Length: 262
Image (cartoon, rainbow, N blue to C red):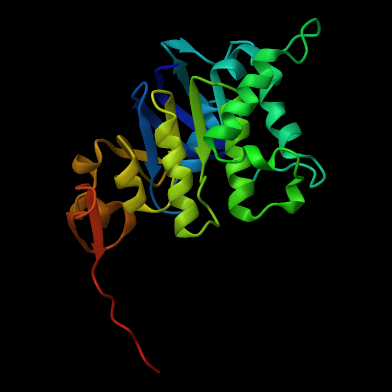
């Protein structure tokens, strides 16, 4: 279940404002790509463009070389799934019902719920360690449990490409690691996520996309992207980059900042 997503000179706008400009990006098939950059640089907008939630004002999004724009919505939904930053569902819905919604792209009026759907839902719940919550309602869950259930919904869709906008937001460190471990275990699907934490991105990603002011300024392996000069340019932070003693991946150590007293 791998697919190759690319963009060709993609420009995305809200009204007259260009948020992403001339983005030509290659997301390696079957790998985990993370988009990084400062707040407001266009990361989430790029992800929305990839998901076809925001139409290009110029350029194109290509899946295995074919433009996504003219393809039928159901066809795209079978191949590409999006988990937004703050998904919404009724608190009274059960976990099983919510995750079951991920099967809609695979159903037709003449073929409703099937054994294959049941298998996919249970596999998604198992992958996210939430199978024991299947009969619970959303309002009975903790924040970490809810995030894993939403991830199970995306997994149950069985897309070839998974797009995730800040899947670790509002989670403590242990739950952030849980979510990122689940995503790594989904490979060789093509996984594309927006993350704020550069060190977690460098630890878990195979490929990084760095953005600044709506433009892609670098893309490549974490060891090639996470450098003091690029961190200073993209994030405005002076730092040293050392080898993470646990993983061997790049680890950003910010320089101390002067503390002003009254």
